[in-house]
Length: 109
Image (tube, rainbow, N blue to C red):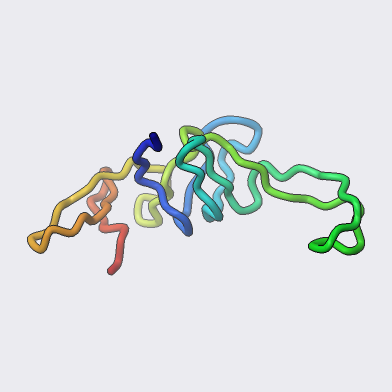
C-alpha cells in the first residue's frame, strides 16, 4: 500500500541530507510506492546511452535520479527555509496545506 505524503509534483523543496544537501528544486515526479521523488537538478548522474527512438544520437546524457522523500523538505519562501507541512480542513470539507512555521497557506486554489 502506498504511504500518504504531503509533497506533490511541482512543489519547491530543499534537500536536507546527502551529497546535494542545501540544493533547492522543483519536484518533477513522485513515486509513492517506493517513497522516492525526482527533483530538478538534484542527484544528476551521467548515463551512457545507445541510440534509440527517444535519443537518436546516443552518447553520454545527464539525468536526474530518484532520491528518498525523507531527504527533502518543502521550501517556504516566506520562512526562507525547509519546513514541515500541516493540513487544515476548510468549512466546505476541502483539505488545505499550510506551513507549520509561519502559517502561510501553500495551496492557492
